[in-house]
Amino acid sequence: MLVPAPRSPLSGVGVVGVGFRPELAADLLSAPGAVDFVEVVAEACFASPAARREASAIARIWPVVPHGVKLSLGSASGIDMDRARRLGALCRELSAPVVSEHVAFVRGGGREIGHLTALPYTLEAARAVARNVAAARRALPDIPLLLENAACTLRFPGDALGEGDFYAEVVDRTGCDLLLDVGNVYANAVNAGVDPGELVGSYPLERVAMIHIAGGVVEHGFYFDTHAHPVPAPVFALLAQVVARTGPLPILLERDGDFPPFAALAAEIATARAIARSAPSRPTLTGPTLAGPTLAPTRPGLPASRALLKNSAGTSPPSASALAEVQARVAELLTSPVDPPPEAVAPFDAEDVARSRAILQRKRVDDALPLLPRLSPHREAVARLGARCVEASPRAPRLTAVADALRIAAAAVDDARLAPEAIVDRLLLRARFVGPAGDGSVKPRLLPFIRRERLPGGRVVWAIKGMGSTAEVRLIEPRR
Image (tube, rainbow, N blue to C red):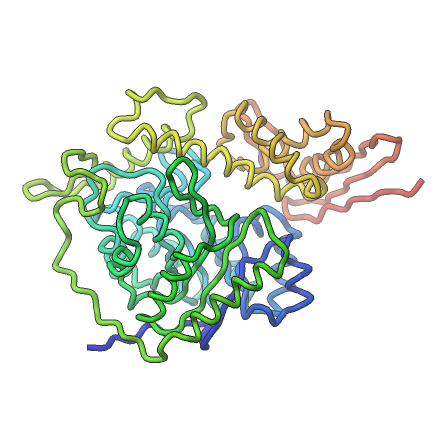
């Protein structure tokens, strides 16, 4: 029986978009027809009033899809409802046709991990996602919520379901369709030593409503989905395989760093558009055959003898409290100030933990740099400086990116090449945030703020903010 793919809110053959980033703004605005829609990171809009105003402005040009990365739909302890309400408000402001989030967790045991961490492939994890989606739905507008599959850098021993079966459980229990990240599927397949086509074929492709593609790179024998490299040919091949079965779907190219000349991205967009247009208008999918949950680990590379969240015959499924304990343990392993010794990470793989910790350090820098706009022309030098800053500083429990940006700006002030821009960036951050406190955390500044700074050479700049955390910050730079 033919099962049609769900109708997308961004319907049309060959619909292709791109993640909107400041580095791409000038090229996109000069050639708005290059893409059919754009995606904005919701948390960037929460952190920066300027980014939010920019998102509202570009919504007059293209459909804008808010993409969440910190709702933590996989947390056994539940989601932050205030964050969900803010996401809903953003969707309404942008008249968003659809909103997306990840099937992952970013906090556990009260600790912020700071990066999307894949879930164990178990029924209890799928149930946790379903509970959290139901809670989030109360704060979101009545538009489709798409759930994105995550890349795995840390494997959970004893997964009870295969990867595709797990996502079939998620869509069945939540009623949401998938945002299929083909790059993440490719990364997981390569790192597990399985065929990418076979892995993507195990997904519930009849429930895919949108697709992500992105580039990556192999480092030390591990494929990282970096969003900072060209989309490799095998990912485009996997994309073609998917749309050959689903029919045309909206496709979005993600690029977050190391931006090439726009012509190179335009060529990738054109390739994705050609693949989408070559897809059959009538899908060839049949419904997935789910004979019930697999009782032994089915993901290649995870031996059945290693069990952490075991779900086998004769044992009861793990409870939400057990999942919460595991997530708290993972959060502790990934965010502790010192590297845990190999014997302390069992039953997790020590190499997986070390790799994930390194990714988190890199991610902290990536998250902080957009909060330093004056320093952006010196990105490479600031990134090197940022790496040293975060390595020497424990992760702040709240508003980590802001705390790290303040550290980086303070260090950059001591560099004569960076000092003028760093002083202004630090002043703007201080206008909007208070801290850091003793634990390194910062919080939004509610009271008015007025302060001046003297730049090298004697020029003075002022920052002025009114009452409330969302009040606009005015920067005054008198001419001499």
